[in-house]
View 1 (cartoon, helix red, strand yellow):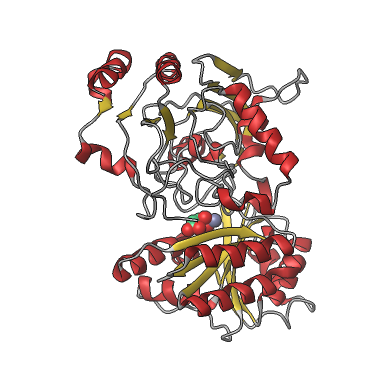
View 2 (cartoon, helix red, strand yellow):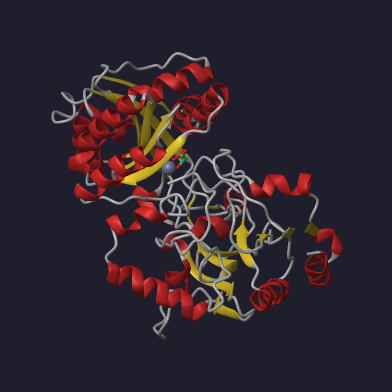
Length: 471
Ligand code: MLT
Ligand code: ZN
């Protein structure tokens, strides 16, 4: 393998090929500690040409390529997996370039390694804002967000990452570059690379740059944390709020078990109380004019009043940020609890029709009780997107089978925003027909005949090796 590593050194420079096992470890393990494998090297290209040369070499040598951004993925799609062919981690973090903000087209070009936070700060300095935001913003990258078609809290207003990509530059397994960064809002000329690559999880090409949409920067903001008697009431309340609050940016759901863990983690009392079978909703509004009256009027309206058990409203930036912590920092709280338990959390990111969310939470609670695990549910209410976290779970396969099976029966999806990765590949058949899967495999084969790009990811066929513990 030394000769192979030398080949990569000759392409990207010796400083940008990491082969020391201690140095590579951070790239070989996902941040939850749930997924892990070994790479021959971590290769850090600095240009599209270098990505092309590395991919062409890997195709010729039969070396798998796992493209990696900030390594914040939750389904094992961005780290090596045990067994199989030798692989490299292709770290895209050197693609950190951000172009000038074009306030006429409301677009900017960003490298795949730019973090969500850097994209947002850059946009804000030019008086614009970014339409996608989520808690891992300081590490998660544009390339990863495109690969997983990431969501986050602003989907309700602006849609997922797929809607934000106006142009893309990517490199095929052959080493050839495809796509365009022109960002034309209207163009009909056959295959649309952004549509094909968003959500493809590094299996069709490696994204190097994207032309991204921007949205207006609203200086005025109001946040409300509201308690309801049930998730069904929360859904009814959301419908009323959406109807009259035009500035609604986010409607996040926090179930009592999630509130309990975040309260403990922050060491702060929750300013509102919900019944044990109830739930909390965090409404966030941003606008050019102070949206407080609009939001509070909606929450106090005749239809809404019986649904709201308790509420706290914040307009001042510090108070808002303290309130938003009760949602934004739940993942951090779960990770910390898992570390104390000595076992990574088992995470299922799912979505179901809004009318079925109570059924989904009931199912997950029963499954958790049966396993002896502690269920921590929270998520993005408007999309019916629940993050079902199981702490101290023992039988991951049984939990996944029961919960994902029920999600499919309810007409939902087994992944709403985290992707399929390797974790959920065996369950793809629940939401995709054999014809869907065969067509997907054919597209993949056409673009990557040697099968080097992220093998195992999005692939429902049984793995060719053992050693992966996750379902
Ligand atoms: C979130 O909404 O906070 C993220 O998707 C992270 C998570 O599910 O843990
Ligand atoms: Zn989320």
